[in-house]
Length: 348
Image (cartoon, rainbow, N blue to C red):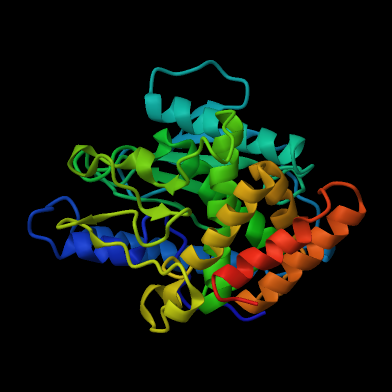
């Protein structure tokens, strides 16, 4: 398969990073932060290239699904100091505690709800790095492991503190080892979309929330005091997550007719993910069960091609729903709900 030259798999989108770097009122985000981001993006591209062998013929993982948390010591290096491994005593570092615990929640969800053995379905160890960079305002999956910045305490708080962040980024690994959706244009937007789907589903599952109880916001937990109450994305109403002088206005469209067609953000991978995100929200709320909706999406993920479009995803999600209805896993009428939701956002 082909791969985007510089795939971006950060929690905070690149256009937000650039807006903050250009804002003189935000001195904690500068060119150095952007250079770190660029370096890690290249490392992730290399890792994904190594993982391009189809999952069904890939060699078995040698891991045991164990968690390992490393302290980067505010450097831009990963795996500097192992501070907690699977089953070891809890530390006093809140970032270590939360990264370790959240990774455990993600692992348990995939095992119990979706019958998946770790991120690659082959017992991959979960490596997490905390305290990465100096007030680094982001978190990322680089194709091998998770890394969290501490945030600057003004715009963003510590990224390891959010289950939503941990689940979203580790879910990029699930997509990497399942369909390998190319991180560019519509397939890239679907890649981001699946991470939001699993991120919000795992958060709702852990908090025992129904679709009606959930706020359907992505990134609200890591907003610092200056942006408290804002979020990075809204799955319920794309384009409404934020609107302020610091971040600008949320660019996500909610309808395919308004999709972004430029080259920014790898062809709109974060921007256009709002369109299928809205579909998932509509389906989950009408079904009344986010976990059931996630099971449909998880089934579909395994049948998507690396360069899948929104239209192809809509067809596959509907086909997966029909298969699960026949198997008794989803109630009758779900297929029509799914088709109606895609049609509602202009994709059919």
